[in-house]
Image (cartoon, rainbow, N blue to C red; front, side):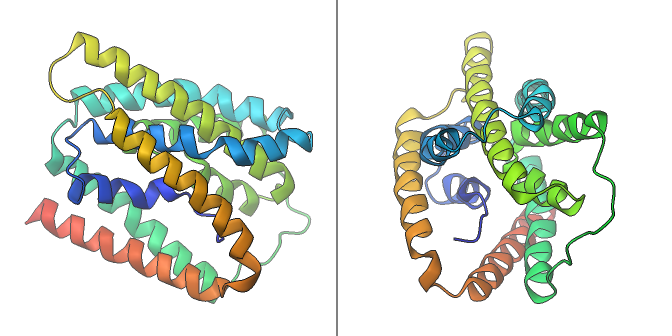
Length: 240
């Protein structure tokens, strides 16, 4: 209901509750996006909103970015210690941003210039690297930034969703290929990823149906507080 990717919050559950080993937890989380995303993609396809220039620019950046991120995850930060610190680095700013945006909504920009195609692709590349390391498609990061830079939500939402889906598909494939050349738990845990994805598909549908009846402000604050608390917890465990 609040437009935040479930993958951001699902990865800590897979890591600490379900016991998915590292670095396999990252492609398993990408698999969640692959299964959970087609319903919304189909709606945007039927509305003719998927194939604009913004979608192509985002894909031009996120696709090479997720490959770079996957290589970094497998060969540079394969262990759980550093990865917990990366979780904290992502979740803490996200939680604070959610709380601040809820308590002080951003004013629509007027008269501001939209980012250039080069800036959009560069931003998508950076987000793709983060997605390849953490295990998210990047739409929950790209969306707020692009909207804040003056792009309309109706244009950003389908492009970010398409980028999340294709990037997750490519990322899971890259991890599967890397698992053939390296040792350890690199390939996604298919049963966990598929089960979580089916839950995400149903949950996303129910969330959209319930949106008019739920207090969005309270939900955003709850998610923000949860992300902040998880970020602090993982930072303490990584540094302790």
